Structure formats: C-alpha cells, structure tokens
Amino acid sequence: MNNKITCKECDNAACFIKRRCSAEWLKKIELKKIQIEHKAKDVIFREGGYVEGVYFIQKGKVKIAAKGADNKEQIVRLAIEGQILGHRGSGDEKYPISAVALCDTTVCFIDNDTLYDAFMNIPKLTIQMMEFYSRELRKTEIRMKYLTQMNVKEKIAEALLFIKQIFGINPGDGTLNGSLSRQEIADLTGVMAEQVSRELGEFEKGNLIKKTGRRLKLINEHGLREIVKKYGIEQYAEQK
Image 1 (cartoon, helix red, strand yellow):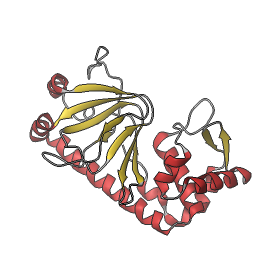
Image 2 (tube, rainbow, N blue to C red; image 1 turned 180 degrees about the vertical axis):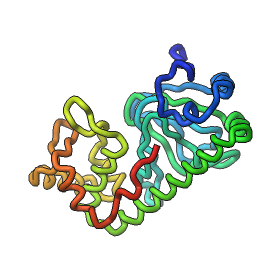
Image 3 (cartoon, rainbow, N blue to C red; image 1 turned 45 degrees about the vertical axis):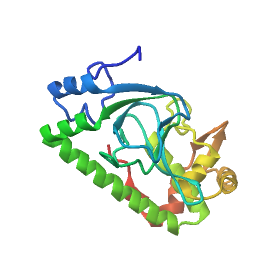
Image 4 (cartoon, rainbow, N blue to C red; image 1 turned 90 degrees about the vertical axis):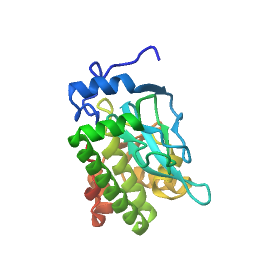
C-alpha cells in the first residue's frame, strides 16, 4: 500500500507490540509486517481459514464472531486500536472465528515465523501475550456464564454497557463511539433483533437511553447498571 506507516511514525500508543518491544526488535518486525486497510464490513480473516499469523489493530473497530450449528452468528468479542486479532491458533490450525471491520480499519499483520522468533527472544513479550490470553479467556467465560442467566432486558442492558466499555463515548455528542446495528446487538447477546428493538424502545421510554439516528446515548448509565448489578459485570472489564 502507498500510505504505509512505520512503527516509529505510528501514534498508536496502545499497540501491543510497540509497548513491549525494543527499538531493535521494532525495526525487525517493521521489515516483515504487512499493513492492510479495510472498509466497513470487510472480512479481515474468515472462520475456517488457516492461521498464518496475527493481526494488530492500528486504527478502527472490529467484531470477532463465530457461526453456530444453525449458521447463526454469535459475536464473542469487540476490539479496538492496539488490540490483537487471530491469536487463538498457530501453525497449521484453522481460525475458529471470523474478524470483520465495523468501520474503516487498518491492521498490521505479522506472520507466524516472525512472531515465533520475537517470542523466543523477548521474554517480556511472551509472558504478557500469555497473560493477555488468560485475561481474555476469563472475561469471555464470565460474560458467557452471565448471559445464560439473564433475561432479555438484562442482556440488552449488559450489551450497551459492554459496547460503552470497549468503544467509549463520542466526546462531541456523548453517544456510544461505535454504532452496532440492532442485528449486531442481537448477535452479541443471543436474542432476536426484534427483541433488541423492543427493549431499546422501553429503555428510551424509561429515560435510560436516547436514540440519535443510528447512534445511542446512555443518559442514565447508573440505571442500566442497576438492571444487571447482581451479575457483577465489572469482573470482565476490558484490560489493555
């Protein structure tokens, strides 16, 4: 691509690699990495494809999803700048999930051999990658456990708080910084899109949220937290 940004030029201070590698190793990785730009709805990698390396989000937002037995999509994770994609496999393994850009997104791809070389030479990188795996698995397990216990109202409240936790808030208008469709919210919670629309309508009537076009504003976050407080959702708060 014509607009490749070097690791030194990149202003993404949250980058997993940049935060943990020496200047020497950043130069080595720079020679090997491939920078790829994606438009919204582009597939970054597809479930069932062979794992050839790992992707690091330079900028943008991504959903990570898997297909169930009935081919219904389940969103298992949301990711932002500096985070990792495609790390749940190596070598000749196949991806158990797909990654799709939610907006214009740039990723840096590092192949398995380069990553393995880095792991063998940078203990700090290896240990912190293992810690990242552990945290993510724990968060996913806790969230999935609670979702099986929640009713529809609780699931939608949890989803709104989860989206805010990952994507944050637009400083201009206070809306959620990332617009998921009703279907995507359904895929995040395991309910029907019609149920999402109905509950969002009820939340708006109850002055918990405000709809602004496709975007949502949480005008009473405390009220949403009260709906799900018995589940202790803070246990899987995003950790950078």
